[in-house]
Length: 94
Image (cartoon, rainbow, N blue to C red):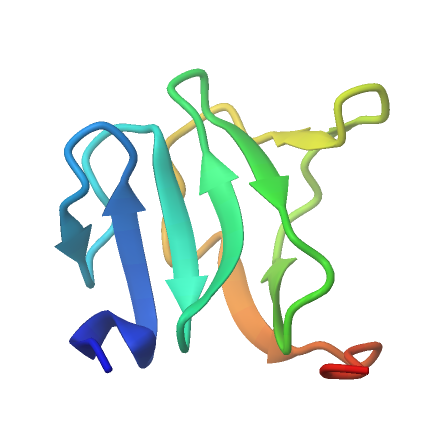
């Protein structure tokens, strides 16, 4: 088991570095308790996963691109932008 299997972690895609702080630039993946919850790209678009035990809940309203499924955040993600919540629709392994 790895340390980044617990809590909130960020993984930079190109350097494969793990951090408990939001990286200074994208692209990076967002993990919580070992599950990937989303990815922020270089252009600040944010893709969210909706099938894991926890979800990223955006605290502010950001425009959703219905064609690509990403949110137009317009800036580097901050802790004030989101919270991690239990996924009410999570069924676990079936």
